Image 1 (cartoon, one colour):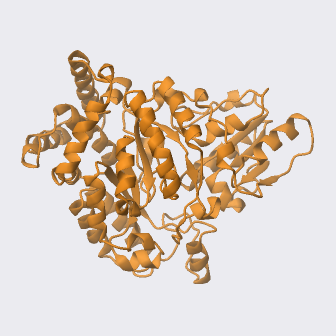
Image 2 (cartoon, helix red, strand yellow):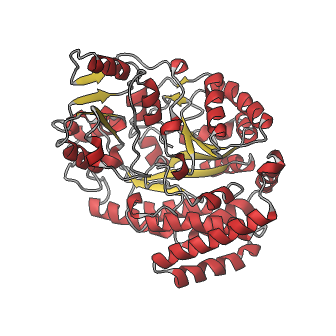
Image 3 (cartoon, one colour):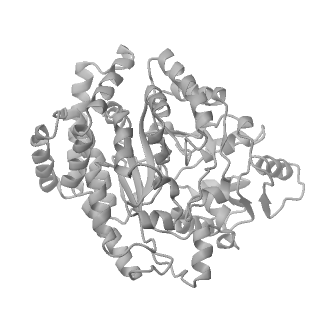
Amino acid sequence: MGGALPLLAALTPEGHDVRLIDEAVEDIDFDALGAYDIIGVTGMIVQRDRMRDILLRLRALPALVVVGGPYAAIDEPFFDGLCDVLFVGEAEETWPRFIEDFAAHRPIERRYEQTGRTDMTRLPKPRIDLLKQQHYMAASLQYSRGCPFRCEFCDIIVIYGRKPRVKTPGQVIAELDDLRRDGIKVCFIVDDNFIGNKREAKLLLPEIIRWQEAHGYPLIISTEATINLADDPELMDLMYRANFREVFIGLESPREASLRETKKIQNVHGDPLAEKLARIRDAGIVVSAGFIVGFDNDDASIFDEQYRFIQDNAIGQASLGILMALPRTPLHARLEREGRLRDDGDTCNFEPAQMSRAELVDGCAELLRRLYEPEAFFERVLGNIAASRPFREKRARILAWSKPADRASPLTAARDLLVMTLRLGRALRRDRMLLSMGRRYLALYRGTGGRGPRLSLHNFLSLCILHRHHYKLSRTGGDARSLNMFDAAPLGASSRPALPPAYGPPKMARESLRQA
């Protein structure tokens, strides 16, 4: 679930009617919006064009239109003439003040920017009760803001700074309690770097472990972190015991020159990336990863190099994107000085150093297609399982942690299996590839016995559902709007995981994915 809107609702002073609309799970009824006094719009750079479309339509309404969020924080000129009020950066102080001034008919400003960093320990619990939770595959929870590193392309340190700020363990546990009461089974901690402050993370994790133990491990957790997680066995063990099943890591490139160029120094310190990835896997945690092409040190051979690295290291879910020069980032400033920025609506907004923009765009698209051919995807997933006995042993223990009541009965498991099979079949038929892709899936299932322990049909179907989603994304330019509600929660084609909360499988199938 998107965390920004529920938090904004919690920050709204009492006495106001608040409605949250997430286009990932519902269409916008523009006629109904006419009844509201204030309409807020937020989004990331990948939603930029859609934000413009929405804002242009809102012009016809009498409401005051306000904009905030990550893209507004880095590209204020884009919103000139599109809104009445712009919020820049964090808004925990400015949003309540704006609402109070508006309600009291006091003058309001056209631009609000908070002067100091938000004190995370004073944040209220997000209003997740306002979300249409039946449409979401996973909840989101924010624990920290900020990252200590200096990656040239990243806007996180521009918006949130380089000193990680965290919530208290008590705040996090209170939010976990809310998720559990609402029957939510999966939580993504959306921090850009969960271990940005390792000391604080090690204080939080034992509290989550105690909470999980007390309630029979009701919640599966995943998050984002940096590769230096592999250098801290204590931290990895705490995350495993807290039921962190997956971690997304921005690996970006196997090419050291490109990593040094973009100041991703944490990725070149110490052991090779492959050894670090193996240690995280052995700790019982799946690694998904982000990759970027288009650095100055990348030539046309980078596409094959990326493909081989991802396959060899069995990274099942690999997000891939073209380097983007975001406004206000050091990369944007450097390329502007060099006269290499381009703002012509192309997928690539700069001139690469060693290939044309067309070569970069086409090469990235072809690499994404190769990665999500079913044979390549299952080679990675099965290789991940087969490569590590400690991983298999730790995963087996997870089943023993949950309450017996939380485990599906044989009848329920059979029903879920039937539902998954039927819905996957219908989805493939809609895609006009029921026979072609079905044959490939069947051949892969028959061959799983040669790559370590054979997957159950239940788990294999879960992976087919996930694969179909990525397969379609790899052939639609990463446009999640082209996918239907049976698709698994997507990892967008970008370095960091864009995790729109919709596109989850139906409820029974969603429950059946818990053990996958």
